[in-house]
Length: 523
Image: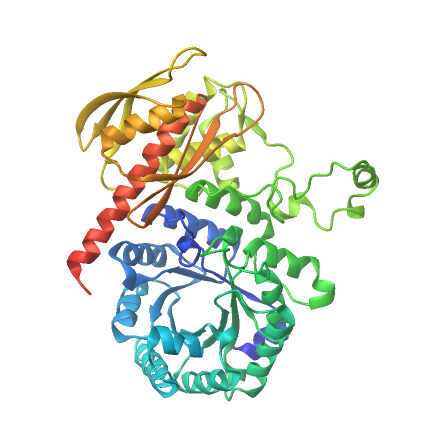
């Protein structure tokens, strides 16, 4: 569909880059299996394009793109690639199994990037861009071209390079606000200017890719589509580098809620927004702020008396959308120990988990075990089970496994912890003391595993209400420039803390493994 037809239909394509740009958020790295689970939910959500990764960056990313490309049925699947033949060849290889493949190639266009990063002049940049698109055109019909740091680039230069890559065969032109520098009125005017003055601009899809450094990513994206763009590049929960990317759920609901003003909509099934948000949070361990628009716990909460009174009389007095419209269930109390396998499977699907039979059976066993400890099982409990048991690295056992733990603490004594673990198939046991039992646990686990990682963030939350609630623990660790998150849940918060830390250490070991593979492979 070309840009003209899209404009007539008033449909804005949603280009999801959660698996690529979103994963670049510190601590948000995902395994191949986790990316596949997210991709399945993105298709259920109704996104038009999935940017599955940066195939040339590592063997792990290549495999992620390849797996997602094979899984996706309706969305177009792209791999990012620098404007280099080697990157493009790798990207093309990764997406060749997709029903609707394509590549997304880019090169910087701002003078500051040309001078300090690329060390190229404008003529060389145009030449590289055209050469990349022309090369890709030999193998695929769908090529998106991005001018990195477009919002700080000379508009005349953008018009020049866009004109040339369109001639070379680009089907989509992306205008990124890479550093989150733009102001909405300015960015909207830039988009209108480029669309109007670029030769061949009526034959392509114009896209906006905005970052949130000034908190304006959604506003800038809306300004872009208001001025003719027909694709928004975004991520679930707005995750991404630095302050993140355009939030998919926010921009989608803004278009839907203000259709009377913008006269635009998307193909997104909005009832899948909340399940998608929760799924990503469970996979990455990045908590959703309670005041996050659309999907935060307080998004539909009312405490002020006047607000409560107004909502009770008529919801639209203070609610411009309904919880049901984004998939928030009216009653989260769903199951108990007498619930059957079929009901459990249906609930998993409602929550965004489209699991195969083997994984569903594993999750069901854990559900039954938890049901023996808790009277009532909530959606959040089920999400925690899947995050812990299913979304893990397949193909080989974890490097570290907790076998036994004993902790002691009192008002008069020093907290201590004794831990037994399986490390690379062998068993090790040790003990340590600390400022508290969690500190003691983490110290002895570090001794046993030999980890020198630093604990950057630690948080614990009760998943549901009640004294039998599971404690959900998330931690972020860093070692040698690599940041990973770990998460776990348990009715014993100390056990959850230890398991979350070990989960993070296993992810760290996996990342280091891929780094070694890349280093051995060479440039």
